[in-house]
Length: 231
Image (tube, rainbow, N blue to C red; front, side):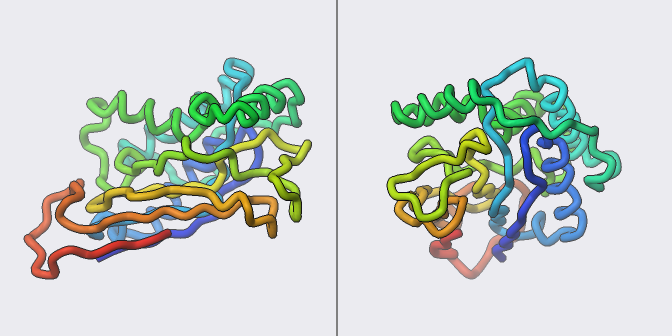
């Protein structure tokens, strides 16, 4: 069984907690579909942002960490309306310039060091022992397809070639693919030549089958390899 979940999570800087809470709400609505699948994929405009400002956004990031911890413990109200409030921050020209400099240098790994989603997942994994009772479908078990092979996919000017980033936002990797279960990532890329939207489309290719680890024990399948899937 393969489960695909497509989502458009809450937008804007400073709202990482709302995005994490929204993931929980969606998973709650899906019941055990994600947990029982051999492989599951959660993808779309997940809206996680890049913030090189560090402590200037520490309060919003702490709220997101708490939301991730609550999801991993399978505790608390998962509704986004109960997320810790965080102000939507205005554009910061200095922060935008820092990210654009890394884009120009092709140093995408440096940009990802400021990425909300990557920081959240890394923090939760470091604390895995405290979340040992986590439900297998919760935030803890999602893996993020690495984005270090391409430039940020948002916010770009429609019709511009080569890519031109909007002055209204700090460039970010908002378009993401999360996966779990018996899935091995084979390729992840962005189509920066497509200029039809203020986002650049991305693609991910996976091999599915026994070669990829499963989070929960299941009875042996007689279906053999599940082949490949692209999200």
